Length: 233
Image (cartoon, rainbow, N blue to C red; front, side, top):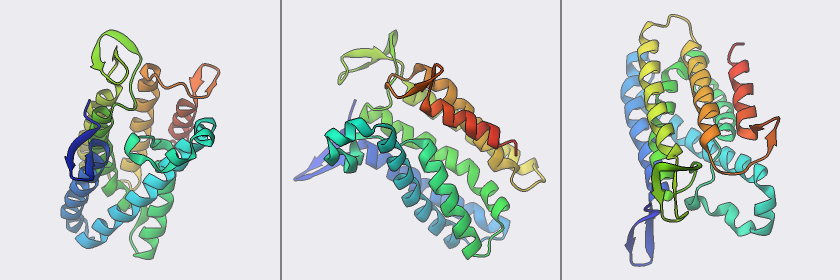
């Protein structure tokens, strides 16, 4: 794994942060290029990506801290060590959706229609970001004989980060195709919630991190079930 890609004097370029930055910038570019086709100014959607990125990171980090509170109470400084990983998609989704609704209404954008426009690029951004997780060595899977060797764990593990990357990339293409044919506002974003939740639910069975469990399901899976059910409404 390559958690640090490059050192320039006292400055270290971390793979996790770099891939996150690439994900946001690339998706902002694509979304900005797509927006005018739907009657929305490019700069409005590029600004949208900026604010959603900030709120998403904050929400994802807060959620991760809450479910790992015992650890962070012992090592409080690690709360701000984002380069080590530790962003939970479920928390980021909640904070991003709330921010997006506020932003859309403030800029007089049709909420559901704009969510549909953004949905494929949310999946694409997540897909790219998971490459950062793989390079960083976080979000790893359980031991398996044919898995990828992770030096930091001295074991061959399920590359669950790459499972997510591939799965979310497929979700991106499915959403793009569905967006072209879906007449009803909100359907594309709803499909994103369903597919992303289902993907994370099943990948979680191969994840190694020990988080709280309820009836054999991790807390992440419980939230995924909740998101999946809510998406029907």
